[in-house]
Length: 378
Image 1 (cartoon, rainbow, N blue to C red):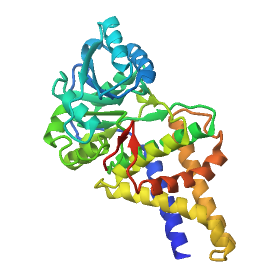
Image 2: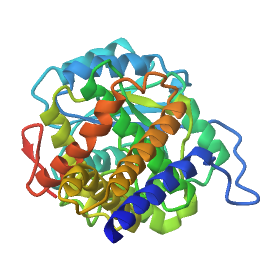
Image 3: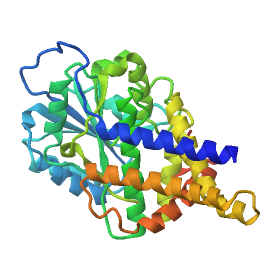
Image 4: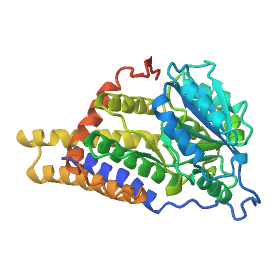
């Protein structure tokens, strides 16, 4: 009974508390008189890619449709040993869009992390102080750069901005599950920023300043970990000055990425996400992850506990009710932000299956995953 109460109410207060904080979050200047800004900001956009031929055309089309002064932005693409037509696609785009500043680089391996190497290499040639990172498998909204510009206009001394990511929706259970998970992650992320304890962000949509990156020595100290170019940099900059870190809570800033098309690849991706969390210094990150894991486990085993009369019928009902109620509220709040009205599709199967997915991810995290024919170092 004691552990049922601890796990259930812990999940209720931790997860729901963060999401409700995210619901009311609004970025505000933390100084009475923030520095004045008289012009739009300029950006260097960094994109790492490896064998992304099937996705690059959609990304490049969205870049060409961006509503921003292209003299104030450059796009730096870093090729991580691609063996497909990715480089050719980029070369053709650059030749056909001379008004868009495009730089094509080949990654020079320095560490165990290809993406961190690419970002560090791009920063050496980036012309602008304000950096935006995204991925090759995303679609950018037309007002994307305007949204970042507005945030920096409001908070001109910001040194890190996290922004929203959404999974491209389709009418099938696997995609809906990934969309719901990403929605929940985004809402807890916003909640962390709201209570000034940021612990998550997504490398597909984030920004920082070159000065701040160099002030904390970039990725020094975690280059041996393959992933984590996002949360490890966030942790360093939060420690430097949490008040200069904010979340860009704007529908104009939402980038769309593609779902994994089969269960194995989806779970392997989540294993990589989970494993980098073990190296984080954030207590809140570990608390949320542990709470989700425990509640998922309790949700799965509670019917078995009832069969053996280790818990009562009211306790079983309470466990199921807390888990389902919290998850539905999280999805309702999150999908309002993402303006998605189809979120109830496949909702009941998601509520039943996702706890099993969480446990499977935890078990698979005990060994090294692979990503794009490479073993991931954690």
